[in-house]
Image 1 (cartoon, rainbow, N blue to C red):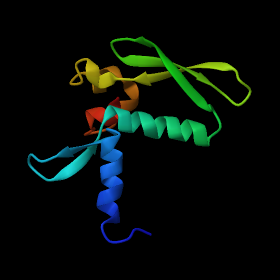
Image 2 (tube, rainbow, N blue to C red):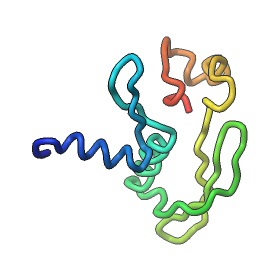
Image 3 (cartoon, rainbow, N blue to C red):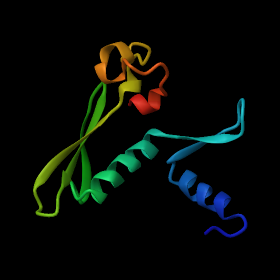
Length: 111
């Protein structure tokens, strides 16, 4: 349970690591950044015991970043984080068949 002001302190800690960005345009709120989505994806893979370590970046492409990773046994893995929003995200839904059924989508979600 969070004490008085605990939510603000927790969000400030997350924002300090650039996992969320504070928006003050139309509304006062927060949005997930690429790093925030990456953190959630890596956390899910670690919790599922798919991998235990993420190392250095191996490469950067138009649509993805590739990192060195390892599992419990020390096997070398490649972690590929897609960045569909880097290119023209207006045409992503037509290029990605798994998104065609959606009427609306955040381009960060699609990445």
